[in-house]
Length: 307
Figure (tube, helix red, strand yellow):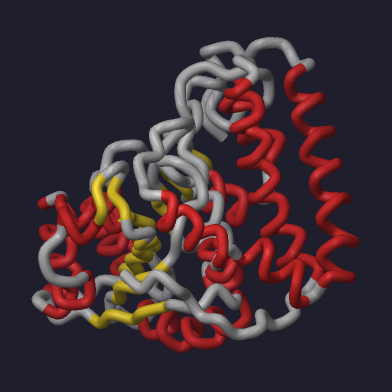
Protein backbone atom coordinates (compact mmCIF):
# COMPACT_ATOMS: atom_id res chain seq x y z
CA UNK A 1 0.00 0.00 0.00
CA UNK A 2 1.23 3.51 -0.81
CA UNK A 3 1.95 5.39 2.40
CA UNK A 4 1.79 8.86 0.86
CA UNK A 5 -1.27 9.71 -1.16
CA UNK A 6 -1.47 12.55 -3.67
CA UNK A 7 0.39 15.60 -2.47
CA UNK A 8 -1.40 18.02 -4.78
CA UNK A 9 -3.55 20.94 -3.75
CA UNK A 10 -7.16 19.81 -3.31
CA UNK A 11 -9.61 21.43 -5.70
CA UNK A 12 -12.34 23.61 -4.27
CA UNK A 13 -15.63 21.86 -3.54
CA UNK A 14 -19.11 23.25 -3.59
CA UNK A 15 -20.47 24.08 -0.16
CA UNK A 16 -22.86 21.12 -0.41
CA UNK A 17 -20.05 18.59 -0.79
CA UNK A 18 -17.90 20.15 1.89
CA UNK A 19 -20.81 20.28 4.33
CA UNK A 20 -21.42 16.57 3.76
CA UNK A 21 -17.76 15.73 4.33
CA UNK A 22 -17.78 17.76 7.53
CA UNK A 23 -21.07 16.21 8.64
CA UNK A 24 -19.58 12.71 8.44
CA UNK A 25 -16.37 13.83 10.19
CA UNK A 26 -18.10 15.51 13.11
CA UNK A 27 -20.73 12.77 13.40
CA UNK A 28 -17.98 10.18 13.84
CA UNK A 29 -16.08 12.34 16.32
CA UNK A 30 -19.27 12.85 18.31
CA UNK A 31 -19.83 9.07 18.44
CA UNK A 32 -16.36 8.53 19.90
CA UNK A 33 -17.05 11.26 22.44
CA UNK A 34 -20.35 9.66 23.46
CA UNK A 35 -18.75 6.24 23.82
CA UNK A 36 -15.89 7.73 25.80
CA UNK A 37 -18.36 9.27 28.26
CA UNK A 38 -20.22 6.00 28.63
CA UNK A 39 -23.37 7.36 26.98
CA UNK A 40 -23.37 4.58 24.35
CA UNK A 41 -23.02 0.83 24.74
CA UNK A 42 -21.54 -1.80 22.43
CA UNK A 43 -19.05 -0.77 19.82
CA UNK A 44 -18.68 1.33 16.69
CA UNK A 45 -16.32 1.53 13.73
CA UNK A 46 -15.74 5.05 12.46
CA UNK A 47 -14.71 6.01 8.94
CA UNK A 48 -12.52 8.91 10.04
CA UNK A 49 -10.14 9.64 7.17
CA UNK A 50 -12.25 7.77 4.60
CA UNK A 51 -15.21 10.15 4.41
CA UNK A 52 -14.34 11.38 0.92
CA UNK A 53 -14.95 7.95 -0.65
CA UNK A 54 -18.78 7.81 -0.39
CA UNK A 55 -19.04 11.57 -0.81
CA UNK A 56 -17.23 11.33 -4.15
CA UNK A 57 -19.53 8.51 -5.27
CA UNK A 58 -22.74 10.16 -4.06
CA UNK A 59 -23.92 11.83 -7.31
CA UNK A 60 -22.88 8.80 -9.37
CA UNK A 61 -25.43 6.58 -7.59
CA UNK A 62 -29.13 7.08 -8.21
CA UNK A 63 -32.18 6.31 -6.10
CA UNK A 64 -32.79 3.16 -8.13
CA UNK A 65 -29.35 1.77 -7.32
CA UNK A 66 -28.79 -0.57 -4.38
CA UNK A 67 -26.01 0.20 -1.90
CA UNK A 68 -24.50 -2.46 0.36
CA UNK A 69 -22.35 -1.28 3.23
CA UNK A 70 -20.26 -2.87 5.96
CA UNK A 71 -19.33 -2.41 9.61
CA UNK A 72 -17.59 0.92 8.87
CA UNK A 73 -20.61 2.37 7.12
CA UNK A 74 -21.80 5.58 8.78
CA UNK A 75 -20.31 7.66 5.97
CA UNK A 76 -21.99 5.44 3.38
CA UNK A 77 -25.37 5.93 5.05
CA UNK A 78 -25.02 9.68 5.57
CA UNK A 79 -23.86 10.18 1.98
CA UNK A 80 -26.90 8.25 0.78
CA UNK A 81 -29.60 9.83 2.99
CA UNK A 82 -28.15 12.80 4.89
CA UNK A 83 -30.07 11.57 7.93
CA UNK A 84 -27.86 12.07 10.99
CA UNK A 85 -30.91 12.22 13.28
CA UNK A 86 -32.16 8.78 12.26
CA UNK A 87 -28.72 7.18 12.32
CA UNK A 88 -27.77 8.60 15.72
CA UNK A 89 -31.17 7.59 17.10
CA UNK A 90 -30.51 4.06 15.82
CA UNK A 91 -27.12 3.92 17.53
CA UNK A 92 -28.49 5.45 20.75
CA UNK A 93 -31.67 3.35 20.72
CA UNK A 94 -33.99 6.36 20.69
CA UNK A 95 -37.31 7.08 19.02
CA UNK A 96 -37.02 7.87 15.34
CA UNK A 97 -34.29 5.26 14.84
CA UNK A 98 -33.88 3.96 11.30
CA UNK A 99 -34.49 0.36 12.37
CA UNK A 100 -36.20 0.83 15.70
CA UNK A 101 -32.90 0.80 17.57
CA UNK A 102 -32.28 -2.92 17.05
CA UNK A 103 -29.71 -2.61 14.24
CA UNK A 104 -27.32 -0.33 16.06
CA UNK A 105 -24.18 0.96 14.41
CA UNK A 106 -23.60 -1.84 11.92
CA UNK A 107 -26.89 -3.34 10.74
CA UNK A 108 -29.03 -0.81 8.90
CA UNK A 109 -31.77 -1.33 6.32
CA UNK A 110 -33.52 1.51 4.57
CA UNK A 111 -35.06 1.46 1.13
CA UNK A 112 -32.30 0.15 -1.18
CA UNK A 113 -29.54 0.41 1.42
CA UNK A 114 -28.27 -2.43 3.62
CA UNK A 115 -25.27 -2.64 5.92
CA UNK A 116 -23.92 -5.64 7.81
CA UNK A 117 -21.08 -6.35 10.19
CA UNK A 118 -20.45 -9.79 8.69
CA UNK A 119 -17.40 -9.50 6.47
CA UNK A 120 -18.00 -10.49 2.84
CA UNK A 121 -21.69 -11.23 3.38
CA UNK A 122 -22.85 -8.42 1.13
CA UNK A 123 -20.90 -9.52 -1.94
CA UNK A 124 -23.04 -12.52 -2.99
CA UNK A 125 -26.20 -10.66 -1.97
CA UNK A 126 -25.16 -7.69 -4.11
CA UNK A 127 -24.43 -10.04 -7.02
CA UNK A 128 -27.91 -11.52 -6.71
CA UNK A 129 -29.49 -8.08 -6.60
CA UNK A 130 -27.41 -7.06 -9.63
CA UNK A 131 -28.78 -10.05 -11.50
CA UNK A 132 -32.32 -9.00 -10.63
CA UNK A 133 -31.62 -5.43 -11.73
CA UNK A 134 -30.19 -6.62 -15.04
CA UNK A 135 -33.40 -8.51 -15.75
CA UNK A 136 -36.02 -6.20 -14.25
CA UNK A 137 -34.50 -2.71 -14.04
CA UNK A 138 -31.89 -2.22 -16.78
CA UNK A 139 -29.56 0.67 -16.03
CA UNK A 140 -29.64 0.27 -12.26
CA UNK A 141 -26.60 -1.08 -10.42
CA UNK A 142 -25.65 -2.71 -7.14
CA UNK A 143 -22.77 -0.98 -5.34
CA UNK A 144 -21.04 -2.84 -2.53
CA UNK A 145 -18.41 -1.42 -0.16
CA UNK A 146 -15.78 -3.81 1.19
CA UNK A 147 -12.37 -3.47 2.82
CA UNK A 148 -9.00 -4.98 2.00
CA UNK A 149 -9.43 -7.55 4.77
CA UNK A 150 -12.62 -8.86 3.17
CA UNK A 151 -10.57 -10.31 0.31
CA UNK A 152 -9.85 -13.22 2.63
CA UNK A 153 -13.50 -14.30 2.38
CA UNK A 154 -14.47 -16.93 -0.19
CA UNK A 155 -17.84 -15.28 -0.80
CA UNK A 156 -16.01 -12.39 -2.48
CA UNK A 157 -14.62 -14.66 -5.18
CA UNK A 158 -17.86 -16.55 -5.72
CA UNK A 159 -19.58 -13.22 -6.31
CA UNK A 160 -16.86 -11.97 -8.68
CA UNK A 161 -17.04 -15.19 -10.65
CA UNK A 162 -20.79 -14.86 -11.19
CA UNK A 163 -20.51 -11.13 -11.90
CA UNK A 164 -18.04 -11.82 -14.69
CA UNK A 165 -19.89 -14.83 -16.13
CA UNK A 166 -23.28 -13.12 -16.15
CA UNK A 167 -22.02 -9.58 -16.91
CA UNK A 168 -23.72 -8.14 -13.86
CA UNK A 169 -24.08 -4.41 -13.15
CA UNK A 170 -21.98 -4.73 -9.99
CA UNK A 171 -19.72 -1.99 -8.64
CA UNK A 172 -17.29 -3.18 -5.95
CA UNK A 173 -15.75 -0.33 -3.96
CA UNK A 174 -12.69 -1.42 -2.00
CA UNK A 175 -11.63 0.91 0.79
CA UNK A 176 -8.06 -0.30 1.19
CA UNK A 177 -6.78 1.33 4.36
CA UNK A 178 -3.86 -1.06 4.66
CA UNK A 179 -4.93 -2.91 7.77
CA UNK A 180 -7.51 -5.63 8.43
CA UNK A 181 -8.64 -4.93 11.99
CA UNK A 182 -5.16 -5.27 13.54
CA UNK A 183 -3.29 -7.14 10.80
CA UNK A 184 -1.44 -5.21 8.07
CA UNK A 185 -2.73 -6.06 4.62
CA UNK A 186 0.76 -7.10 3.53
CA UNK A 187 0.68 -9.80 6.21
CA UNK A 188 -2.75 -11.23 5.37
CA UNK A 189 -3.24 -10.92 1.60
CA UNK A 190 -0.95 -12.34 -1.09
CA UNK A 191 -0.87 -10.54 -4.42
CA UNK A 192 -3.00 -7.49 -5.08
CA UNK A 193 -6.65 -6.51 -5.36
CA UNK A 194 -6.01 -5.72 -9.03
CA UNK A 195 -4.52 -9.16 -9.64
CA UNK A 196 -7.38 -10.93 -7.99
CA UNK A 197 -9.96 -8.97 -10.00
CA UNK A 198 -8.01 -9.75 -13.18
CA UNK A 199 -8.23 -13.45 -12.43
CA UNK A 200 -11.96 -13.19 -13.13
CA UNK A 201 -11.58 -10.87 -16.09
CA UNK A 202 -13.04 -7.95 -14.14
CA UNK A 203 -11.82 -4.42 -14.66
CA UNK A 204 -9.93 -2.71 -11.85
CA UNK A 205 -9.52 1.01 -11.30
CA UNK A 206 -7.08 2.38 -8.71
CA UNK A 207 -7.77 5.67 -6.92
CA UNK A 208 -4.97 7.25 -4.91
CA UNK A 209 -6.37 10.78 -4.88
CA UNK A 210 -8.42 12.29 -2.06
CA UNK A 211 -9.73 15.03 -4.34
CA UNK A 212 -13.49 14.53 -4.59
CA UNK A 213 -13.82 16.37 -7.88
CA UNK A 214 -11.01 14.43 -9.55
CA UNK A 215 -12.36 11.11 -8.28
CA UNK A 216 -15.81 11.79 -9.69
CA UNK A 217 -14.43 12.85 -13.05
CA UNK A 218 -12.46 9.62 -13.39
CA UNK A 219 -15.27 7.34 -12.18
CA UNK A 220 -18.25 8.80 -14.01
CA UNK A 221 -17.63 7.05 -17.37
CA UNK A 222 -16.65 3.81 -15.62
CA UNK A 223 -19.83 3.71 -13.55
CA UNK A 224 -21.81 4.36 -16.73
CA UNK A 225 -20.25 1.19 -18.20
CA UNK A 226 -21.21 -0.77 -15.07
CA UNK A 227 -24.81 0.16 -15.85
CA UNK A 228 -24.37 -1.58 -19.20
CA UNK A 229 -23.30 -4.83 -17.53
CA UNK A 230 -19.54 -4.46 -17.12
CA UNK A 231 -18.67 -5.19 -13.46
CA UNK A 232 -15.94 -3.05 -11.95
CA UNK A 233 -13.67 -3.12 -8.91
CA UNK A 234 -12.63 0.36 -7.75
CA UNK A 235 -9.84 0.31 -5.19
CA UNK A 236 -9.31 3.39 -3.05
CA UNK A 237 -5.89 3.61 -1.43
CA UNK A 238 -7.03 5.31 1.74
CA UNK A 239 -6.39 5.34 5.48
CA UNK A 240 -8.30 5.29 8.71
CA UNK A 241 -7.35 7.84 11.35
CA UNK A 242 -8.69 5.98 14.33
CA UNK A 243 -8.58 2.41 15.65
CA UNK A 244 -10.47 -0.55 14.24
CA UNK A 245 -13.32 0.13 16.65
CA UNK A 246 -13.12 2.32 19.75
CA UNK A 247 -9.70 1.64 21.21
CA UNK A 248 -7.91 -1.30 19.61
CA UNK A 249 -5.24 0.47 17.56
CA UNK A 250 -2.01 -1.52 17.37
CA UNK A 251 -0.43 0.35 14.47
CA UNK A 252 3.05 1.83 14.90
CA UNK A 253 3.18 5.56 15.56
CA UNK A 254 4.63 6.22 12.10
CA UNK A 255 1.64 4.65 10.36
CA UNK A 256 -0.81 6.69 12.40
CA UNK A 257 1.15 9.87 11.69
CA UNK A 258 1.19 9.13 7.95
CA UNK A 259 -2.60 8.82 8.03
CA UNK A 260 -2.88 12.17 9.78
CA UNK A 261 -0.50 13.84 7.35
CA UNK A 262 -2.63 12.69 4.42
CA UNK A 263 -5.99 13.45 5.99
CA UNK A 264 -8.25 15.45 3.67
CA UNK A 265 -9.57 17.49 6.62
CA UNK A 266 -6.33 19.26 7.44
CA UNK A 267 -5.29 19.52 3.81
CA UNK A 268 -8.56 21.13 2.76
CA UNK A 269 -8.38 23.56 5.69
CA UNK A 270 -4.93 24.58 4.45
CA UNK A 271 -5.90 24.83 0.77
CA UNK A 272 -9.25 26.62 1.21
CA UNK A 273 -9.21 28.20 4.68
CA UNK A 274 -12.01 30.73 4.23
CA UNK A 275 -14.60 28.24 3.02
CA UNK A 276 -13.44 25.53 5.41
CA UNK A 277 -13.60 27.61 8.57
CA UNK A 278 -16.91 29.19 7.53
CA UNK A 279 -18.55 25.76 7.35
CA UNK A 280 -16.59 23.65 9.83
CA UNK A 281 -17.78 25.41 12.97
CA UNK A 282 -21.33 25.55 11.67
CA UNK A 283 -21.50 21.80 10.96
CA UNK A 284 -19.85 20.94 14.27
CA UNK A 285 -22.50 22.98 16.09
CA UNK A 286 -25.24 21.27 14.07
CA UNK A 287 -23.97 17.83 15.08
CA UNK A 288 -23.85 18.90 18.72
CA UNK A 289 -27.44 20.07 18.45
CA UNK A 290 -28.49 16.79 16.85
CA UNK A 291 -26.78 14.81 19.62
CA UNK A 292 -28.51 16.84 22.32
CA UNK A 293 -31.91 16.52 20.65
CA UNK A 294 -31.67 12.77 20.02
CA UNK A 295 -30.38 12.04 23.52
CA UNK A 296 -33.48 13.72 24.95
CA UNK A 297 -35.85 11.42 23.04
CA UNK A 298 -37.53 8.44 24.72
CA UNK A 299 -36.09 5.02 24.15
CA UNK A 300 -37.18 3.36 20.90
CA UNK A 301 -39.67 0.49 20.91
CA UNK A 302 -38.73 -2.84 19.38
CA UNK A 303 -41.93 -3.09 17.35
CA UNK A 304 -40.80 -0.17 15.18
CA UNK A 305 -39.82 -1.49 11.76
CA UNK A 306 -36.95 -0.43 9.53
CA UNK A 307 -37.61 2.54 7.30
